[in-house]
Length: 178
Image (cartoon, rainbow, N blue to C red; front, side):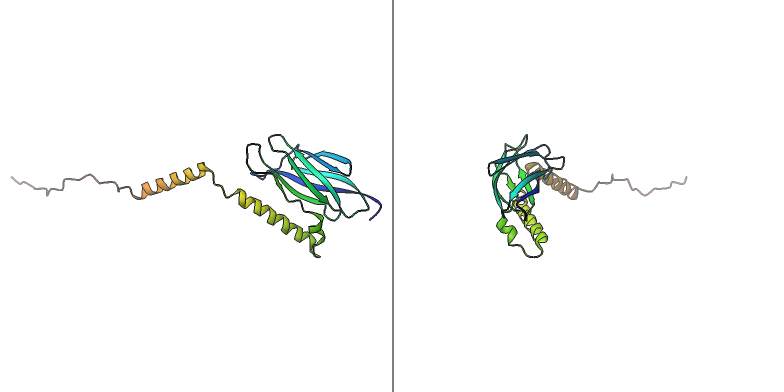
């Protein structure tokens, strides 16, 4: 690695509940007395250009602010070998959940095998599925009520008496011949 190298790190900011990208979120990275500020694009993606000075990693503080969401703050290790910072999930201010991320430290990125990118993808997917399984364990009340109403209607139709035919007078017609 050269003495001074500029590396672009990128990540994405999404809504934890909806998994939708959050645009115009302010991303601030503070490291070694320097600060870098950027904003997310329409897809929630941000890019941070960092100057590395002949080191394997850089300790930094990442802060994210977005309108309608709790602020996110995290201490991270940046490594030139791991340029994808993963997803950061923000929660709304009324939620009792905390923001989460898939940011990995440099120790996990240096222990990768030759299939580093697929290992990285697996790590992201497992971290993502863990947070989603915790999040999706709560079923909203309106969904429960709707399912119960549908079941009630099905049972009402199933147990409904078949329509009754009106009785017809079935007398034997008598022919009177006079």
